[in-house]
Length: 77
Image 1 (cartoon, rainbow, N blue to C red):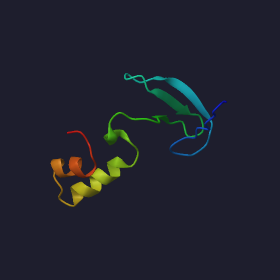
Image 2: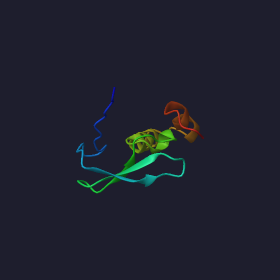
Image 3: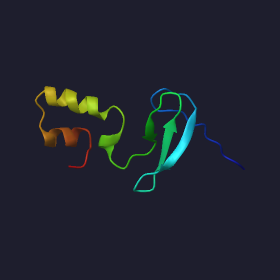
Image 4: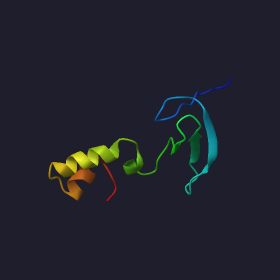
């Protein structure tokens, strides 16, 4: 029994991907030929995931502290 998974770019959604080595912790890196972006599917730290930066900015503008933000978003301090 074979299992196939179709991968798509995190940003543009197209399947025009190319393997681009590994990160320091051994996670596969990918390069999207359509939007010319580099990314990983699995990140070791939650702060590197797409969309977290906007949440951090929003919480900072609402006067949340560093410890509050890391607790709410479950980030390692």
